[in-house]
Length: 417
Image 1 (cartoon, one colour):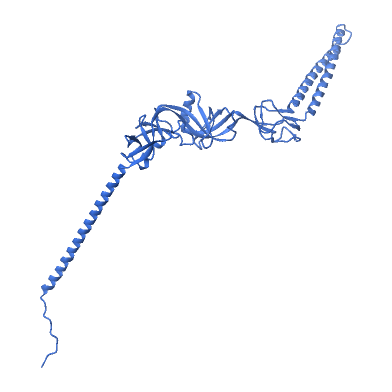
Image 2 (cartoon, rainbow, N blue to C red):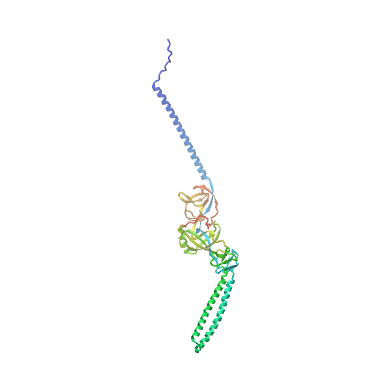
């Protein structure tokens, strides 16, 4: 009889399974080590290639010739200017008013006309003042006649009194009449002077030399001395004044300069490009403005060309000192880095970095105390592409103006020479 039950596989010994799994782990570990080694080799290759590329690029940059603009450091005297904002003011301003009541008959000037002191401006109706003058003159003639008669009578009374023909009182009364008429004549003469003065006031003239403005009253109007507005404004334009301010820290330099002599002041247009006039510093205000920490100064200018006009805003600058035999370079030469200020100097077609000390700046020029010598060829433009020892191709830059425009950077106080 046959048995249909399946035949069971023979059982494996336990150490056989353990050997299989150990071999698998070894294979996987070996593969991981190979992969890691491959990654390390690839990364080292890439780093080596990057370093070689960077070195090649640096070498290429070092060998590249960079075009730059250069200028020469020069030794010269440099004026020290202090820059400030100011406004123009008329040297004298007069609001012409009437001193008598009356109707304006004539306007004798053209608006904007230049007039001299004493030139006629307006005529007030003179007839009332002429009549007053004639009346005072008639009263004087009358009183003079009465005085003449009174003196004759006094002389007669004196003779009669000496002869005891009349009472002494009559003579003294007559002498008192003479004195009274003499006083009346003096009053008449004063009245004549007053009438002449009023007649003179009716002829209105300019009290100063200057330029008349727009008339404030038209002919035909009746004017009075108490009117709120005047007749016309006259301003003196030559000479003319400029008021400007400087920081209070500049006060010592300004006073020192004034103690040494006249201080030159320039007035320029608001953009700083146009010189409007040169004058002299006249006054330093007697106090500092605490709100703005500034001092107020006044300068006087000759203004024959009429380039300065009242209430015009200007840029003013005062020359307070001169730095003698200074080494000067364009301001664009000076660079700033972690180690301080420096400049690139071209030596044999190679850019050399020199540490420098800047004493002061004046507009577009810098005064260098140390680090540069006269004749050094300095780089003015193109420094952004330059590294120390870079090869450069030079081209002269435009020379900076020896007198910097006030539109440039504000001036700094110079270092002690």
